[in-house]
Image (cartoon, rainbow, N blue to C red; front, side, top):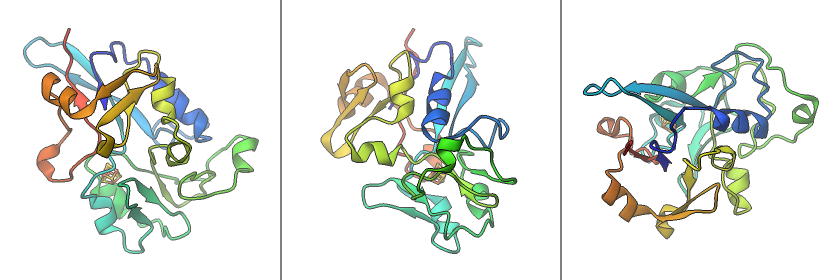
Amino acid sequence: LVDTSRCVDGCTACVAACNKENGLSGQNGPDDSQWIRKVELKEKSTGRTLSLPVMCQHCGEPPCVDVCPTGASFKRADGIVLVDRHLCIGCRYCLAACPYDARSFNWTTPYYPPEAEAHPYSPEEPWPTPKGVAMKCMFCAHRAREGQLPECATGCPMGAIYFGNENEDAVTNGFGETLPFRKTLQNQGGFRWKEELGTDPRVYYLPARR
Ligand code: SF4
């Protein structure tokens, strides 16, 4: 859950925290090194700009999984969508299918810091990734396994990003503030991006209130 009224200046600290956690150096270009990015929307009536942090939406009906010919893209039972680089043949159908532009492709061998190069790979901790495979946000599945928040949530200095198990109906931000999930969505006009496409995105946004 992203509270856009807290993401007031779009500082991109969430991007930096994500890059650091996932061994993304930021040296591979602006697109292929960001698993979360800032999208700017302009409000028609006021002309005011709204910052929307966008990561993989971990769709309930993920088109990227539907089009993947090898099963490299898959959805776990808990809803997290992952990519197995060992099965990825680099066809990039998933990049074309994703309406959120959430995936990137390693056109070249990415630069990783030495500690990331030495890291043992798994789809939950998908670094280092070689040339020729697709990659994206995995909701910090490795941290969720340990009961921790994703790095974007921890790294947000405004507490704008919340995370939680939808079945527990509670989400928590990096300040340790917990909100009742469904009630907050109802009371504050929560919305999902491009919901009309039928992808059932699992990232929710609260509109700006100030
Ligand atoms: Fe797949 Fe894109 Fe949905 Fe993520 S946002 S699950 S990459 S279609």
